[in-house]
Length: 322
Image 1 (tube, rainbow, N blue to C red):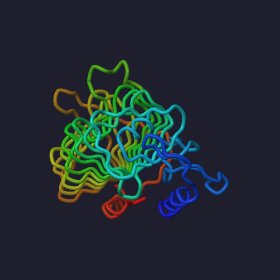
Image 2: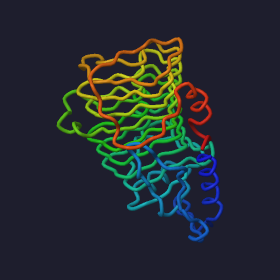
Image 3: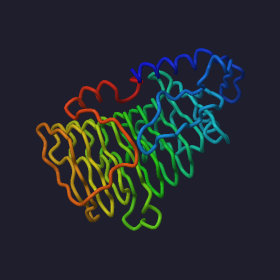
Image 4: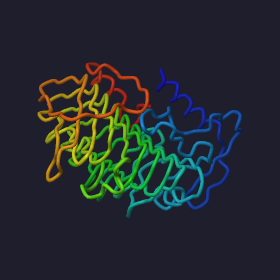
């Protein structure tokens, strides 16, 4: 019901606005504030460590369909809501500044070719977009706080699908469909970066569909606690979750199917962190490795029964399901 209600709110917000001007490929919209209230393109609201992220809510709404228009919008000072229509092929990485909502229109919004880089930013929402065939990461988050990455499709990045690192904090990664991806989600880029990362890298990963992704779902350094809950691991290749280098990961209420190594301690040259697993379901999968202690998350949340996760997540994750 929450997702249905949110979808209607998005449709209403778009319906009441009226085009004001088109400059440089950027279409700005305005409308009756009373009719459009609440003025937000984002659907729903984040739970977990990214709760409270509002993105560009209250700012102008613009539509973009070209690289130049997207860059111009993302570099704008102050809150802005940016709706992507069609496929935008990037020639280079594009930076996102603070107080931005970036959302795909229907199922048409696609960003390809290079990285969406959330760097030194606060309060960013990325929702309902397809990221494909990046020459590096699909989405990179560094030195940034209060970020919500939700209901996206991510595939074919040459490096990480969604990587989070370098002192970033208070982030939720939810309802994304990840597929045809090797190095999927890295949290913390280096064992020697404790001076920046210790006490930070608090991330909630929930209701994501790891669809044949090979590794790093996620691989975690330093973040403690990191909450990995109600995700669907579907035929994951090398491993699901790895807790390394002073990390503490709570793996809770997930469904692992055809996944030989659901979770373990240590990875490569990185020493093991702590990992606590509870209330997970396993189908044709290994039991995983856990050890140490992990604090409970500092927020309230509703946990879906793990047995129901395959149906819930495949019906609700990715582009076009909000």
